[in-house]
Length: 355
Image 1: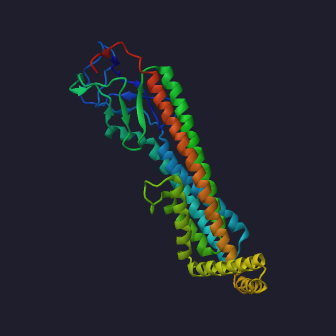
Image 2: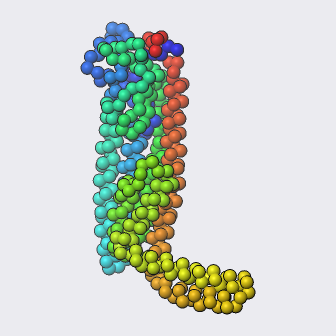
Image 3: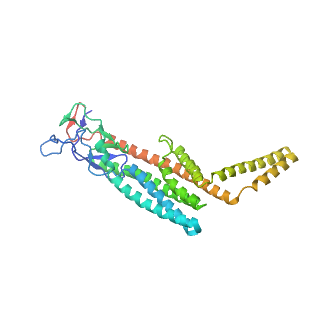
Protein backbone atom coordinates (compact mmCIF):
# COMPACT_ATOMS: atom_id res chain seq x y z
CA UNK A 1 0.00 0.00 0.00
CA UNK A 2 1.25 3.49 -0.88
CA UNK A 3 2.50 5.53 2.08
CA UNK A 4 2.62 9.32 2.22
CA UNK A 5 5.88 11.16 2.75
CA UNK A 6 5.97 13.51 5.73
CA UNK A 7 6.30 17.31 5.48
CA UNK A 8 7.94 19.50 8.11
CA UNK A 9 5.58 20.55 10.92
CA UNK A 10 3.48 17.39 10.57
CA UNK A 11 1.45 16.63 13.69
CA UNK A 12 2.78 14.07 16.17
CA UNK A 13 1.20 12.48 19.23
CA UNK A 14 2.76 10.44 22.04
CA UNK A 15 1.31 7.71 24.25
CA UNK A 16 2.82 9.51 27.28
CA UNK A 17 1.55 13.02 26.47
CA UNK A 18 -0.46 15.15 28.91
CA UNK A 19 -0.33 18.52 27.09
CA UNK A 20 -3.75 18.01 25.48
CA UNK A 21 -2.77 19.16 21.97
CA UNK A 22 -0.60 17.59 19.24
CA UNK A 23 2.95 18.77 18.73
CA UNK A 24 4.79 19.33 15.45
CA UNK A 25 7.76 17.46 13.98
CA UNK A 26 10.55 19.76 12.81
CA UNK A 27 13.53 19.16 10.49
CA UNK A 28 16.77 18.75 12.45
CA UNK A 29 19.14 17.32 9.81
CA UNK A 30 21.95 19.48 8.49
CA UNK A 31 20.94 19.44 4.78
CA UNK A 32 17.33 20.44 4.08
CA UNK A 33 16.97 20.73 0.31
CA UNK A 34 14.25 18.24 -0.63
CA UNK A 35 10.67 19.52 -0.71
CA UNK A 36 7.41 18.60 -2.42
CA UNK A 37 7.71 21.62 -4.69
CA UNK A 38 9.36 25.04 -4.72
CA UNK A 39 8.26 27.04 -1.70
CA UNK A 40 6.62 24.05 0.03
CA UNK A 41 7.67 22.44 3.29
CA UNK A 42 10.76 20.24 3.58
CA UNK A 43 10.14 16.48 3.40
CA UNK A 44 11.37 14.75 6.55
CA UNK A 45 13.80 11.87 7.08
CA UNK A 46 14.92 9.60 9.92
CA UNK A 47 17.41 12.30 10.92
CA UNK A 48 14.58 14.71 11.75
CA UNK A 49 13.67 14.09 15.38
CA UNK A 50 12.99 17.52 16.87
CA UNK A 51 9.60 18.08 18.53
CA UNK A 52 8.56 21.76 18.64
CA UNK A 53 7.35 21.64 22.28
CA UNK A 54 7.33 19.14 25.14
CA UNK A 55 4.58 16.52 25.26
CA UNK A 56 4.69 17.08 29.05
CA UNK A 57 5.54 13.45 29.67
CA UNK A 58 3.33 11.61 32.15
CA UNK A 59 6.26 9.44 33.29
CA UNK A 60 8.10 12.50 34.58
CA UNK A 61 4.89 13.69 36.22
CA UNK A 62 4.30 10.34 37.90
CA UNK A 63 7.83 10.26 39.29
CA UNK A 64 8.31 13.86 40.40
CA UNK A 65 4.65 14.58 41.14
CA UNK A 66 4.26 11.41 43.18
CA UNK A 67 7.25 12.30 45.34
CA UNK A 68 5.99 15.88 45.70
CA UNK A 69 2.61 14.56 46.91
CA UNK A 70 4.28 12.08 49.29
CA UNK A 71 6.36 14.88 50.84
CA UNK A 72 3.26 17.09 51.12
CA UNK A 73 1.39 14.26 52.85
CA UNK A 74 4.22 13.72 55.33
CA UNK A 75 4.25 17.47 55.95
CA UNK A 76 0.52 17.54 56.75
CA UNK A 77 0.76 14.38 58.86
CA UNK A 78 3.67 15.85 60.84
CA UNK A 79 1.69 19.07 61.31
CA UNK A 80 -1.15 17.06 62.84
CA UNK A 81 1.29 15.32 65.20
CA UNK A 82 2.99 18.61 66.12
CA UNK A 83 -0.32 20.19 67.14
CA UNK A 84 -1.24 17.42 69.61
CA UNK A 85 2.15 16.15 70.82
CA UNK A 86 4.44 17.55 73.51
CA UNK A 87 8.14 17.51 74.31
CA UNK A 88 10.59 15.78 72.03
CA UNK A 89 7.90 14.30 69.79
CA UNK A 90 6.44 17.75 69.08
CA UNK A 91 9.92 19.09 68.28
CA UNK A 92 10.66 16.15 65.96
CA UNK A 93 7.29 16.54 64.23
CA UNK A 94 7.99 20.23 63.62
CA UNK A 95 11.38 19.39 62.11
CA UNK A 96 9.89 16.70 59.87
CA UNK A 97 7.16 19.11 58.80
CA UNK A 98 9.64 21.80 57.65
CA UNK A 99 11.91 19.23 55.96
CA UNK A 100 8.96 17.70 54.11
CA UNK A 101 7.76 21.17 53.06
CA UNK A 102 11.20 21.86 51.61
CA UNK A 103 11.18 18.52 49.78
CA UNK A 104 7.76 19.40 48.36
CA UNK A 105 9.03 22.66 46.88
CA UNK A 106 12.26 21.13 45.55
CA UNK A 107 10.49 18.21 43.90
CA UNK A 108 7.92 20.58 42.39
CA UNK A 109 10.63 22.71 40.79
CA UNK A 110 12.53 19.60 39.69
CA UNK A 111 9.37 18.22 38.11
CA UNK A 112 8.72 21.41 36.14
CA UNK A 113 12.27 21.43 34.75
CA UNK A 114 12.23 17.70 33.98
CA UNK A 115 8.87 17.84 32.20
CA UNK A 116 9.92 20.88 30.14
CA UNK A 117 12.96 19.02 28.78
CA UNK A 118 11.51 15.49 28.67
CA UNK A 119 11.20 15.44 24.88
CA UNK A 120 14.87 16.26 24.32
CA UNK A 121 15.23 12.46 24.42
CA UNK A 122 13.72 12.27 20.93
CA UNK A 123 16.98 13.65 19.54
CA UNK A 124 18.68 10.44 20.73
CA UNK A 125 15.83 8.12 19.67
CA UNK A 126 15.34 6.40 16.31
CA UNK A 127 12.49 6.12 13.83
CA UNK A 128 10.97 2.79 12.87
CA UNK A 129 8.89 2.13 9.75
CA UNK A 130 11.12 4.24 7.49
CA UNK A 131 11.22 3.97 3.69
CA UNK A 132 13.46 1.17 2.48
CA UNK A 133 13.85 2.58 -1.04
CA UNK A 134 13.78 6.39 -0.90
CA UNK A 135 16.27 8.82 0.64
CA UNK A 136 16.23 12.59 0.98
CA UNK A 137 19.64 14.23 1.47
CA UNK A 138 21.11 10.71 1.86
CA UNK A 139 18.76 9.74 4.71
CA UNK A 140 15.80 7.34 4.60
CA UNK A 141 12.49 9.12 4.13
CA UNK A 142 9.82 9.11 6.82
CA UNK A 143 6.43 7.70 5.91
CA UNK A 144 3.01 7.91 7.50
CA UNK A 145 3.61 4.48 9.05
CA UNK A 146 6.81 5.68 10.76
CA UNK A 147 6.93 5.72 14.55
CA UNK A 148 9.41 6.44 17.32
CA UNK A 149 9.84 4.83 20.73
CA UNK A 150 11.23 7.45 23.09
CA UNK A 151 14.56 6.39 24.58
CA UNK A 152 13.80 8.30 27.76
CA UNK A 153 10.31 7.24 28.84
CA UNK A 154 9.32 4.52 26.38
CA UNK A 155 6.48 6.56 24.94
CA UNK A 156 5.36 5.73 21.39
CA UNK A 157 5.31 8.73 19.03
CA UNK A 158 3.14 8.53 15.91
CA UNK A 159 2.84 10.89 12.95
CA UNK A 160 -0.72 12.10 12.23
CA UNK A 161 -1.37 14.02 9.00
CA UNK A 162 -5.05 14.82 9.65
CA UNK A 163 -5.38 17.78 12.04
CA UNK A 164 -8.73 16.74 13.52
CA UNK A 165 -7.59 13.18 14.21
CA UNK A 166 -4.45 14.58 15.83
CA UNK A 167 -6.43 17.04 17.99
CA UNK A 168 -8.95 14.44 19.14
CA UNK A 169 -6.28 11.83 19.87
CA UNK A 170 -4.07 14.27 21.79
CA UNK A 171 -6.95 15.21 24.09
CA UNK A 172 -8.08 11.62 24.63
CA UNK A 173 -4.56 10.36 25.36
CA UNK A 174 -3.85 13.27 27.69
CA UNK A 175 -7.10 12.69 29.60
CA UNK A 176 -6.15 9.06 30.28
CA UNK A 177 -2.63 9.97 31.35
CA UNK A 178 -3.88 12.76 33.60
CA UNK A 179 -6.19 10.27 35.32
CA UNK A 180 -3.11 8.13 36.00
CA UNK A 181 -1.32 11.21 37.32
CA UNK A 182 -4.20 12.09 39.67
CA UNK A 183 -4.19 8.55 41.07
CA UNK A 184 -0.47 8.80 41.79
CA UNK A 185 -0.74 12.23 43.41
CA UNK A 186 -3.76 11.37 45.55
CA UNK A 187 -2.48 8.01 46.72
CA UNK A 188 0.99 9.27 47.60
CA UNK A 189 -0.41 12.23 49.55
CA UNK A 190 -2.62 9.95 51.65
CA UNK A 191 0.20 7.44 52.14
CA UNK A 192 2.55 10.21 53.28
CA UNK A 193 0.07 11.48 55.84
CA UNK A 194 -0.57 7.95 57.16
CA UNK A 195 3.17 7.29 57.41
CA UNK A 196 3.77 10.37 59.57
CA UNK A 197 0.76 9.90 61.83
CA UNK A 198 1.12 6.16 62.49
CA UNK A 199 4.89 6.38 63.03
CA UNK A 200 4.56 9.02 65.76
CA UNK A 201 4.93 6.61 68.71
CA UNK A 202 8.24 8.35 69.42
CA UNK A 203 10.38 11.17 68.05
CA UNK A 204 12.99 8.75 66.67
CA UNK A 205 10.44 6.53 64.93
CA UNK A 206 8.77 9.56 63.28
CA UNK A 207 12.06 10.87 61.90
CA UNK A 208 13.09 7.37 60.78
CA UNK A 209 9.78 6.83 58.97
CA UNK A 210 10.08 10.17 57.17
CA UNK A 211 13.65 9.45 56.07
CA UNK A 212 12.87 5.88 54.99
CA UNK A 213 9.92 7.08 52.90
CA UNK A 214 12.38 8.30 50.25
CA UNK A 215 14.07 4.96 49.33
CA UNK A 216 10.71 3.23 49.79
CA UNK A 217 9.07 5.51 47.20
CA UNK A 218 11.79 5.07 44.62
CA UNK A 219 12.13 1.33 45.35
CA UNK A 220 15.91 1.55 45.69
CA UNK A 221 16.08 -1.86 47.35
CA UNK A 222 13.72 -3.73 45.01
CA UNK A 223 14.23 -5.27 41.52
CA UNK A 224 12.61 -3.43 38.60
CA UNK A 225 10.73 -6.45 37.25
CA UNK A 226 8.46 -7.05 40.26
CA UNK A 227 4.68 -6.78 39.92
CA UNK A 228 2.88 -3.80 41.44
CA UNK A 229 1.51 -5.92 44.28
CA UNK A 230 4.85 -7.51 45.11
CA UNK A 231 6.77 -4.23 45.01
CA UNK A 232 4.25 -2.48 47.26
CA UNK A 233 4.27 -5.29 49.80
CA UNK A 234 8.07 -5.48 49.63
CA UNK A 235 8.52 -1.73 50.10
CA UNK A 236 6.06 -1.65 52.99
CA UNK A 237 7.60 -4.61 54.78
CA UNK A 238 11.19 -3.49 54.32
CA UNK A 239 10.39 0.05 55.43
CA UNK A 240 8.66 -1.19 58.57
CA UNK A 241 11.45 -3.62 59.49
CA UNK A 242 14.14 -1.04 58.75
CA UNK A 243 12.24 1.48 60.85
CA UNK A 244 12.21 -0.89 63.83
CA UNK A 245 15.96 -1.46 63.49
CA UNK A 246 16.70 2.26 63.27
CA UNK A 247 14.54 3.01 66.31
CA UNK A 248 15.99 0.07 68.27
CA UNK A 249 12.51 -1.43 68.69
CA UNK A 250 13.21 -4.69 66.92
CA UNK A 251 14.07 -6.52 70.16
CA UNK A 252 10.86 -5.47 71.87
CA UNK A 253 8.89 -6.21 68.70
CA UNK A 254 10.26 -9.75 68.51
CA UNK A 255 9.44 -10.17 72.19
CA UNK A 256 5.92 -8.90 71.56
CA UNK A 257 5.39 -11.34 68.71
CA UNK A 258 6.65 -14.24 70.84
CA UNK A 259 4.45 -13.29 73.78
CA UNK A 260 1.45 -12.85 71.50
CA UNK A 261 2.02 -16.28 70.00
CA UNK A 262 2.18 -17.90 73.45
CA UNK A 263 -1.01 -16.08 74.49
CA UNK A 264 -2.77 -17.26 71.34
CA UNK A 265 -1.58 -20.82 72.04
CA UNK A 266 -3.19 -20.58 75.47
CA UNK A 267 -6.51 -19.59 73.94
CA UNK A 268 -6.27 -22.47 71.46
CA UNK A 269 -5.49 -24.95 74.22
CA UNK A 270 -8.44 -23.69 76.28
CA UNK A 271 -10.75 -23.95 73.26
CA UNK A 272 -9.58 -27.49 72.54
CA UNK A 273 -10.27 -28.44 76.16
CA UNK A 274 -13.82 -27.15 75.84
CA UNK A 275 -14.28 -29.06 72.60
CA UNK A 276 -13.14 -32.41 74.05
CA UNK A 277 -14.67 -31.65 77.45
CA UNK A 278 -11.32 -32.02 79.24
CA UNK A 279 -11.30 -29.84 82.36
CA UNK A 280 -7.54 -30.22 82.86
CA UNK A 281 -6.74 -28.98 79.35
CA UNK A 282 -9.13 -26.04 79.76
CA UNK A 283 -7.54 -25.08 83.08
CA UNK A 284 -3.97 -25.31 81.71
CA UNK A 285 -4.90 -23.21 78.67
CA UNK A 286 -6.55 -20.56 80.84
CA UNK A 287 -3.48 -20.30 83.09
CA UNK A 288 -1.13 -20.03 80.08
CA UNK A 289 -3.28 -17.29 78.56
CA UNK A 290 -3.41 -15.31 81.79
CA UNK A 291 0.33 -15.50 82.41
CA UNK A 292 1.48 -14.48 78.94
CA UNK A 293 -1.17 -11.83 78.29
CA UNK A 294 0.04 -9.90 81.36
CA UNK A 295 3.52 -9.67 79.80
CA UNK A 296 2.24 -7.54 76.93
CA UNK A 297 3.00 -3.85 77.47
CA UNK A 298 -0.06 -1.83 76.30
CA UNK A 299 2.05 1.12 75.11
CA UNK A 300 4.35 -1.25 73.20
CA UNK A 301 1.34 -2.93 71.61
CA UNK A 302 -0.13 0.43 70.62
CA UNK A 303 3.02 1.57 68.80
CA UNK A 304 3.50 -1.82 67.15
CA UNK A 305 -0.12 -1.97 65.98
CA UNK A 306 -0.11 1.60 64.69
CA UNK A 307 3.09 1.12 62.68
CA UNK A 308 2.05 -2.24 61.27
CA UNK A 309 -1.48 -1.00 60.54
CA UNK A 310 -0.17 2.07 58.76
CA UNK A 311 2.17 -0.05 56.65
CA UNK A 312 -0.66 -2.45 55.75
CA UNK A 313 -3.02 0.38 54.75
CA UNK A 314 -0.31 2.02 52.64
CA UNK A 315 0.40 -1.27 50.87
CA UNK A 316 -3.30 -1.60 50.02
CA UNK A 317 -3.53 1.98 48.76
CA UNK A 318 -0.37 1.51 46.69
CA UNK A 319 -1.66 -1.66 45.04
CA UNK A 320 -5.03 -0.13 44.13
CA UNK A 321 -3.43 3.07 42.85
CA UNK A 322 -0.78 1.30 40.76
CA UNK A 323 -3.37 -0.97 39.17
CA UNK A 324 -5.47 2.04 38.16
CA UNK A 325 -2.40 3.88 36.87
CA UNK A 326 -1.44 0.87 34.73
CA UNK A 327 -5.00 0.66 33.33
CA UNK A 328 -5.08 4.34 32.38
CA UNK A 329 -1.65 4.21 30.76
CA UNK A 330 -2.67 1.16 28.72
CA UNK A 331 -5.80 3.05 27.71
CA UNK A 332 -3.63 5.97 26.53
CA UNK A 333 -1.43 3.62 24.47
CA UNK A 334 -4.52 2.04 22.88
CA UNK A 335 -5.88 5.47 21.93
CA UNK A 336 -2.54 6.34 20.36
CA UNK A 337 -2.60 3.14 18.29
CA UNK A 338 -6.21 3.70 17.16
CA UNK A 339 -5.46 7.25 16.01
CA UNK A 340 -2.47 6.02 14.02
CA UNK A 341 -4.65 3.42 12.26
CA UNK A 342 -7.36 5.99 11.53
CA UNK A 343 -4.78 8.25 9.86
CA UNK A 344 -3.11 5.60 7.69
CA UNK A 345 -4.94 6.53 4.49
CA UNK A 346 -4.28 10.27 4.76
CA UNK A 347 -1.68 11.76 2.44
CA UNK A 348 -0.01 14.98 1.24
CA UNK A 349 -0.51 13.66 -2.32
CA UNK A 350 3.09 12.56 -2.72
CA UNK A 351 3.57 8.94 -1.79
CA UNK A 352 6.01 6.07 -1.85
CA UNK A 353 4.65 3.07 -3.74
CA UNK A 354 7.67 0.85 -3.00
CA UNK A 355 7.78 1.29 0.80
